[in-house]
Image 1 (cartoon, rainbow, N blue to C red):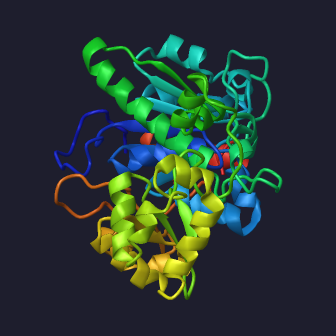
Image 2 (cartoon, rainbow, N blue to C red):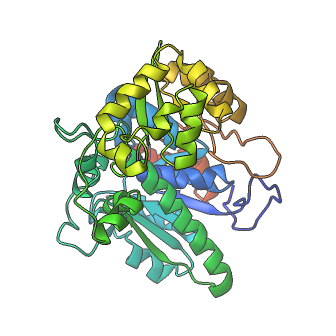
Length: 403
């Protein structure tokens, strides 16, 4: 088996068919970027250390990370510290279009597989590196995790209740967003290479990703706005906006700060007198009297169930959503209609559910790539595709070069 660059499919669901990707990443950001390309039809070979992606060794959540960000790939386990292991890596790179890595700072360079080294030998290769703090600043050698980027980008300073400590977002949103931005950069570079014939060196950092996700808040601050602070739910300059309101069986979130929306809300609840109430007669007044406003919202909606409140408000074109735990999200009719949960087939014949592409291409079925591979599951197949004989492969196994 060889890994050709030639496009072998015209399916709109596999626009990257024929593109070959080498994934040197671990945990979420690097593997997630490579998987986004696999979902679009690219052939992705995950090169793991002999002991596997570190996510394989951090318990149940680590196993979930592997399943979530590695489907549709092949896995080869190599000792890249050995000359023979690096030779295999170079053979892989010689046939690939894209290299993705998010190892600790300097690690790929020490192995001789950094972007400068790779692209000197193979200028058509697109090389994506994802780091914690970028390659230019004083923190370029610091290890970077999602949580550090949340802290140092200002995101944690605006997350949580005003009188409580800063809070992180409930999921590793920076890692996940960096994966998507990395894939976006690769797609742009692939398009650019069609014109220039030359690849590109790409960098994405968790710190820049975290700043990017706060673009509107940062633009307000850069334009002379006050230092943003934690206020819990709600938005600092609009009301009611992103307000969490208790219902008979849970909570909803709603926004009706545009004057027409506020009037519709009052009419929908039979509280037209609130429109003329001096405390609520404008957005500025509602912000100034947010505590009283929230008390009114609770009074208006506490008798409704969450679903009934959302249905009623939606009928009046007011933005609202029920706050749902995962178990309810899974059975929500709108979520089910998207088809985003897909079944992946694992190498042992089993199946597990995972999240598929978060968008559709054309009217075809959502792609359902194979499940994430076990560490080294495809080592022999990949090596044979690179021209190694059965004897070569056996020798490398015995010498600990490949698992």
